[in-house]
Image 1 (cartoon, rainbow, N blue to C red):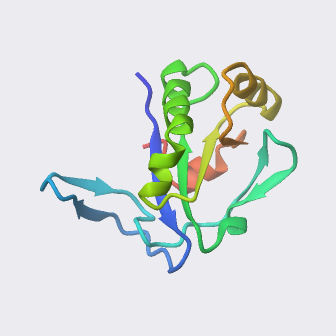
Image 2: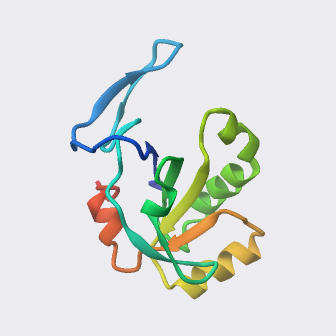
Length: 139
C-alpha cells in the first residue's frame, strides 16, 4: 500500500518542529506533522523534471502543497498525483498556490512517468532522500 505524505505549508512564519492537532469543521481531529499549517518549511533545492533546480524558497509567500510519494513503482501514488493534478481549481479554492511532488528516483525516469501519465504538476527528484528525511516523511 502506498505511504504518501502531503504537507501544506504557508511560507510566512518560522518552523518550530512541533506537530499540531487540528480540528476541521466536522469535529474530526487529526495530527498534522511539522511544519504545520502557517509554518515556514525548511528550504530545499531539488532537480525538476522540467529541467533545472527548484528551490522551495522560490515560493516564499505562497501556499505550497508538498506531496511526498514512494517512487516510480508506486502506481497508487501516481493515481493520487493524477487526482491532485485534476483538482487544481479545488486546490486553489482552499488556498493552495502550488503543488510540488517529491519522490526518489532519477529525474529522467520521473519525467518519463509524468509524460506517460500526462501529468502537469511540478515533479522533483529527491534521489538521496535528503528532503524526505528532513520532513520525516519516511516515518
